[in-house]
Amino acid sequence: QVQLVESGGGLVQPGGSLRLSCVASGFTFTISAMHWFRRAPGKEREFVASINWHDTNTYYADSVKGRFTISLDKAKTTMYLQMNSLKVEDTAIYYCNTRSDWGQGTQVTVSS
Image (cartoon, rainbow, N blue to C red; front, side, top):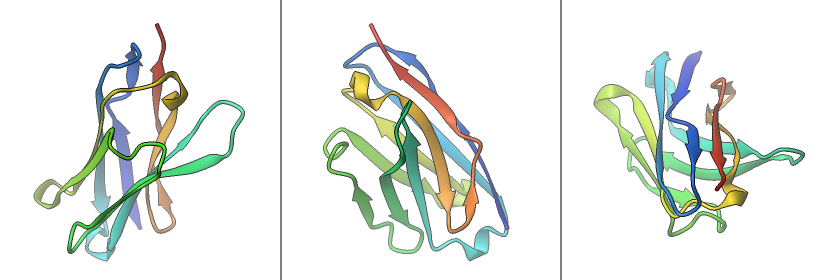
């Protein structure tokens, strides 16, 4: 089992930036990929971005492509999500995931 702890959420104005972090602990040697998901108020959880552990290939939802960047610090077993040009519709709880393990989420609110 892998434990995941997200941080870095907050309140930001449209057009602003935030960087989310997800620290993994426990059986981290089992990780093959890590993912960010989000759940907006009244909506289903949706995929945001993924990164492969070994080759660091990345994948993005169309809604965030060009604005968000996912990255990995293997030495710190930490995944990041740099979010730029934030929009009101990016408001959601952001969750870190690997296989069946989930973090508790971090709230991102984009509002003027």
